[in-house]
Image (cartoon, rainbow, N blue to C red; front, side):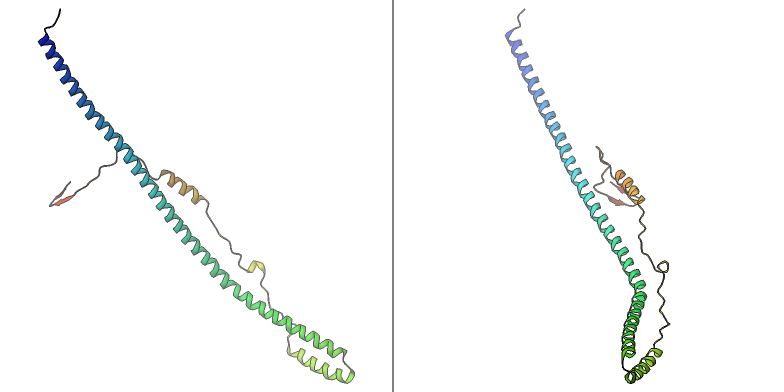
Length: 193
């Protein structure tokens, strides 16, 4: 059974139109598919950039906060050190002055003892008079180590676990972003979106 040439031609034209329509539809779908792929790639790239920027900002801010806290604590150490070391420095100067005075007195006493008899009396008298003005039995009190500050830092290592837990829970990635409102118009009794 042969089809008539006219009918065959009409069927061929119909098939060509159907194929063209099919091709157009496939081309539109391919274009839509490419747009979808581009949207995924572009949004993934943009999301990566946002994440990197956010975490770099966090690192910078956390670094600054930690640096500020360190400076504050170091200043506290400096203040305590300066306030508590001054009395000890004063005591050291007093003791060093006493040591120098005692050395001078010992030298002068040894010379007076070794001198001649006439010379010895005068030197011994001068030495004894000088020695009586210096309180050789009065010693400055040096504080015991238990009475002197011993600085230390109390650092809570649990902060690392707390921060780590918060960091690991910080941020999410969604395949569909939340609703974004691009324009708001205020109206009495409401808002038009």
